[in-house]
Image (tube, rainbow, N blue to C red; front, side):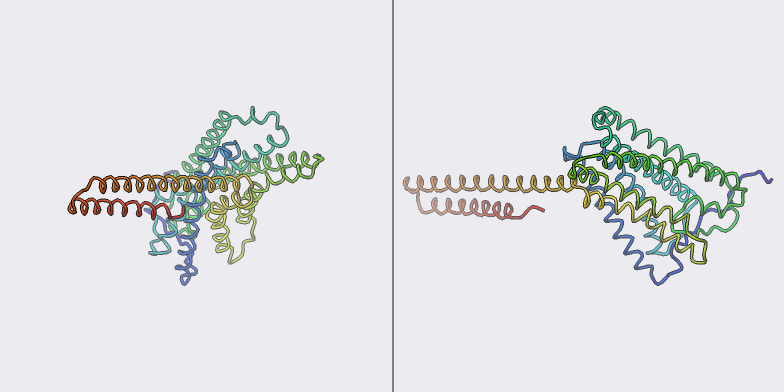
Length: 373
């Protein structure tokens, strides 16, 4: 009977931030604002990269993938946390919990992989610029992105299958605001020692491998930049890496704090706050980092604004010319009618028609006078 796998719980209770019940409304408001900014920022980044030809480069293709991952990451965690804060419904079914854990693992793995790939992209662009178009061709970028997504899915499926095979017959209360692997391991009544060793080993390969790629790439980049004779060239090279480095520090820095902080009485609450930063806040910050600190994105935003202003001006000029032509035709028609000696009844009827046309033309002018959004 000891080897039998069974799940005695039908669901779990997510404690969330229940240690601070008086702050539930504030937590709901903060999470809602963060979620809206995350969706608007990342969707805006995806749209901008898609419509602006100047951003059709490997770096921004990978950034577009990263934005998709960030949207999935936030949408996997925040809606349930909002529900818990607003209605106090902390229950989550076993299937929902495992799915949330799986998507969280997929998104975290994908983010690590793409941050590493973006560092490698910068390495090729700065250290081997002549090979850049060959190594980072559109076809090659698509292959790399597909391989990273597939690797993240397989990596996460293996962990999800192992967790699913465990028995949960202890407390069903998860002292966190979302389902993650360490929290579920604490509730299992199975022997998890072997899995914890495998989890630690794969995490080391995963995180250390990604960090080695990032650090190795930037070591070569720094060496190349320092050899540049032009101060302007060094500044430009550093500026192309600043946004990516900021995103790497935000993601890995907060993630490391989660596992390196000391185990004190308040460590669980601290763990929740740090986890909220790298699972909720970092996806919000990524599009802001790349839009505020990146000259190419700023230039793309400026081009789109100028294009909108030009389109608005062209539309306004078209409506103006059309209305002028309409008014001129009305005047000519009236002169012909007067010279033709129309009766009073016919003249009055024609005036009513012209007044209607004038009102329609005026409405077009009012619509055109509205400034572009």
